[in-house]
Image 1 (cartoon, rainbow, N blue to C red):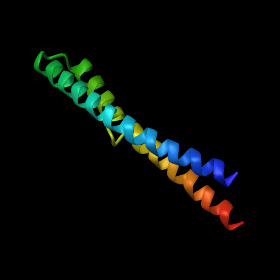
Image 2 (cartoon, one colour):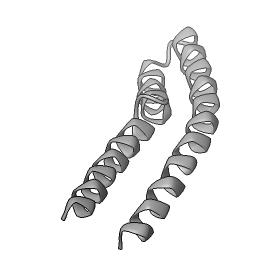
Image 3 (cartoon, rainbow, N blue to C red):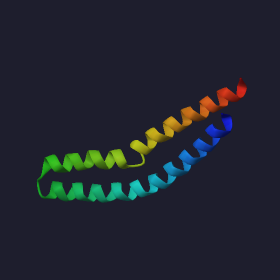
Length: 82
């Protein structure tokens, strides 16, 4: 059980790092689109784009995934102690 959990945690950390880089680039592009919406005075679309850019930025969903992975790691360490 501990071996499977260790492999899962390592795999998840790798996926989070790779997706964080890709989503960071996409987040920047969405932010540029939001700025363009604000320049064209389309406030609703601009605000929605800013919210989307935050969610896919490294401080949004990837941070939540890291938090969940950290809790899995704590659970693995707890199982090791038993």
